[in-house]
Length: 97
Image (tube, rainbow, N blue to C red; front, side, top):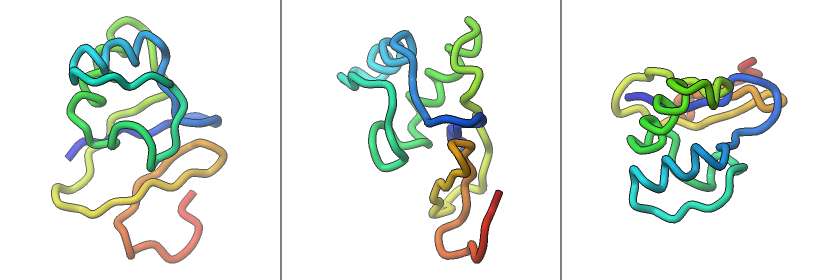
């Protein structure tokens, strides 16, 4: 399964161009760029992943990465000053940065 993670300091956000692309792909009406893990599209959403791929092609959203994790994993996203990491729910015991 593929997921999108923020790879630099700061917070997860989408540019206006990325929001427009996401809405065109998904048929949705998402209207703001900064959101926490629990807000906005799920990080394994196929439309979000395709949006990031499209943005990478034109030099946008370099700070967002697409990562492969095992299928069926119940995952959570943590972060250290905005740099995110994914972990399996219930299988992390200490700092993971």
